[in-house]
Amino acid sequence: MALSEQFLEEDIHPIDIVEHLAEHHDWDFDRIGDDQIAMAVEGQWRTYSLTLAWSGYDETLRLICTFEMEPPAEKLPLLYELINAMNDQCWAGTFTYWAAQNLMVYRYGLVLAGGQVASAEQIDTMIGAAVLSAERYYPAIQLMVWGNRSPADAMQVAIAEAYGRA
Image 1 (cartoon, rainbow, N blue to C red):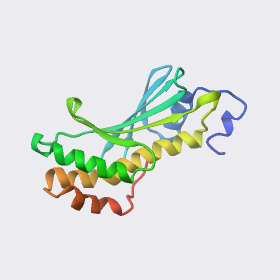
Image 2 (image 1 turned 120 degrees about the vertical axis):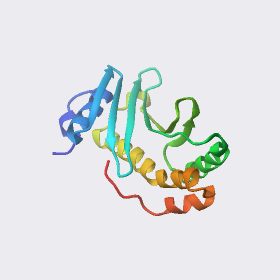
Image 3 (image 1 turned 90 degrees about the vertical axis):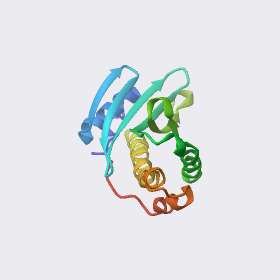
């Protein structure tokens, strides 16, 4: 049975779909509220924290995928250069660094304007793409921050396809 078959007849809340996906994939999750869910998804390099939130006002399902990172202050300019290079290669979603929280962040917003409904497959793909993007660029970030590579050199490791599971 396809992931979305059970939702064909229903107008279901996007976070309910995310909760179903988390159960399906056996991910740890916490339903924070009616419009928000937090999950832990294990990748090859680390476990990523994902939060999905629904805004009825904006009709947008927002995904935030984070992992902790504490680069030395002197590396921040190079980190921001690396993030710009990473974002140039991302077709969907963007990376940013939240220095106050020591978090590397991948963000994506799925706009469902006009009463559109996201399918389970669409949301599952969105989550998978977030984890795969984090997995793809994690080694480059580590090489630049801790291996003293330039952003351009560190990006060479991200050119290869990342392997892992979401």
